[in-house]
Image (tube, rainbow, N blue to C red; front, side, top):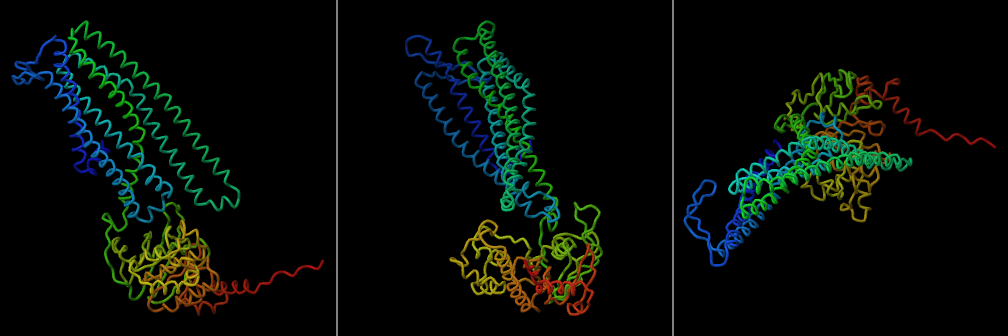
Length: 602
């Protein structure tokens, strides 16, 4: 089984050691029961200091030494064996716990690493809630599946050892008892198929529940603003009711299977006693020892059935996570080894040459068609156009997050290999419209891109992002916590922190994807002034709908329906009365000068 092989790989030698101590524990337990034979013989031998003479006897075909064992020696041996069993079981438990922890951690870390290393084009096709569920809930089920796998192995090892011990007492009765137990397990195969189907249903139901919770929490403010909470609650209750119905059906049938198994074992025990006494003619001491062993074996058979069923319930989680990890690992960013090859900082220009791009799930319609966009080093280039015109796609191509269907990205005349694209991104800083902040302090969010930055650099970055004033006004300043995804800050404050973080990285190329959309006009003007001060030492690509973030650009490209429809120097385009850029500024001026309609006289 691939699950057991993975546990052996992740646990290194622990699996072998755990199974070794498990075997020793079962052997000592069986040997202590086997010693009851001579003890019972002494107890029934009558008065006197009798001893058991081992001379001339054999065990499993092996001759025993010619010695006599008295009752004190035998009792001491039983105590010693039980003590050894306790020691072995303790060591086994520690190794098994470490093995399970290593297995769960390795599985979780492997999937997390695969997500981190996967190409962006592959990641955007997956639901975030499905990834979160795989990394949390599914890993817990995999851990339980691993525990059940080890439990099955333990049960099989114990049964094998007891089988050998029973052979030493009575081979025919041993074959009858174990054969009957195996037949009962085979007859319960339909119930194990039921467990596998239930496991598939559980996986689908829990994925749906996790998706509903994730989407509800992400849109909680919107739901609250429109009183839509009852809709989400009803949807969640519906999935819970479905899971309850499936679980009830499974438990009902599973309980019937366990009941049938118990009845079968009772019938087998009755037949065993009858055949042992009436047909095989076992002695009373042999009979007692066999019954004691079977009393230990019967629960193991029952436990084995339950463990296999539970394993089948949780095994789909292992298959799901394994398939997901293999899919992600096959699409590693930077090539099969997630390599990063250093490339020099750009010196002359960044060129998107005749690029065409279609989204993997977007059908035949192209997001960009035969676009050529040139970013001169040290200058500011602006992309404008209506929503959905391909501006953000162009930025993704510049960053090397996606690959064009046609055309190419050239930096100083050279294209990049997948590993070099990772090296290229070392020179970039990116600020999207939807800011990403850690649930930590402002300082921690800034230092994540520049761990060695001193206080002076931090303050300068805050000044450039028009954030120094509001941060200084906070009670704890830079050590103020921003909340989950920055929810304790306003939208504009979050954007300013994100801008400061990008400035602190001191990149060669700064990409702003509507990064100031939540800022007031005064803050936007201050950010624009900071970008103008950086002209010459930083190349800026800005995507904006507001003239304040376009006016200072050296060049402007207008996109519509994925095509470049206008391009040129900002001053030149401003002089074109019918141009897109001049219309943009005129529209903004009209909005600024618009007056409220006069109130009609009553």
